[in-house]
Image 1 (cartoon, rainbow, N blue to C red):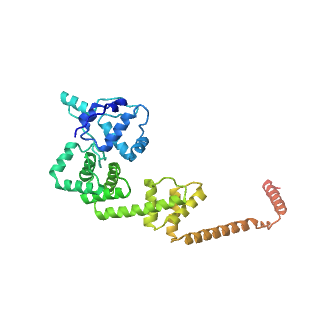
Image 2: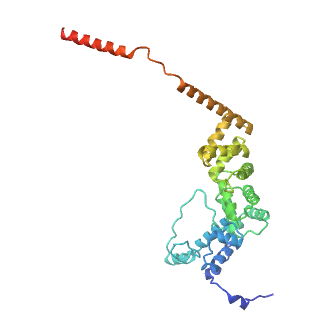
Image 3: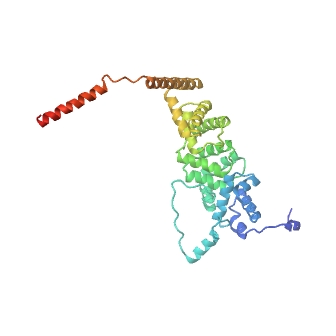
Length: 347
């Protein structure tokens, strides 16, 4: 069955650059196409912020940002305030015509996850030459329950070649991201990048990381319910504190909440470094329960009252009177002075 354009659909139209189809449609993913079409449609009404696009298309905001980066690299989008320039495709043709070599790119310790690298040709070559890559992509596709396009293939191959993660760890990273309901390639790529930085390259290491994060996230959720902490997930610094409190010291949300209250009472604000000092002190004293904390507070109050009582008693003690008559002392001193003066004068 053949189809043709319905003429009535042209009642409302917006322009689409030729290069979208001519040079990029083969490389672009469904998400990237959706984002660009939405931006083209709303380029004149200001509805091009990532939050708006994310909500309108039911996409993760990180995936929207990555799609924008992809189209910026392809020359179809530019940042606010940036002067328009020829697309990379046009520039590449011009360089080829003038026979000028392309400038070398700076190497990075760990490559960024960007859906435009490796290239379409690189991905095709790796799939053709490596059965390991083919099996890995098939397994990943099975986990995700959807077909993996070029963007997903490029990210997975980058995990394998640039991040140095073995296939079983890559699959574990995908599975972990899915458990967090983070199904976009940007989110999956960040997990893999983090594991590479932490040198997590075994299933055992990945499982330990996941267990640690699950415990911390569960404790953080309970702590949020008890306090006025607003961020859904801990920041990187907050997570480091939480890992020490939960994993190293074995404290639960109730103990951490007590430290939170002391921080508020003593400083008037939430301070994780201050909470850390309190919790470390409790750990050194063997405090393990809320009852132990209460006993420590009572002990501190008793010591405080004792010190206050001693200081008050000392202040109230009457001052001892001088053991000599000051007037008599002054008279004697004057007489002695007179005697000395007389002796010196030879009288």
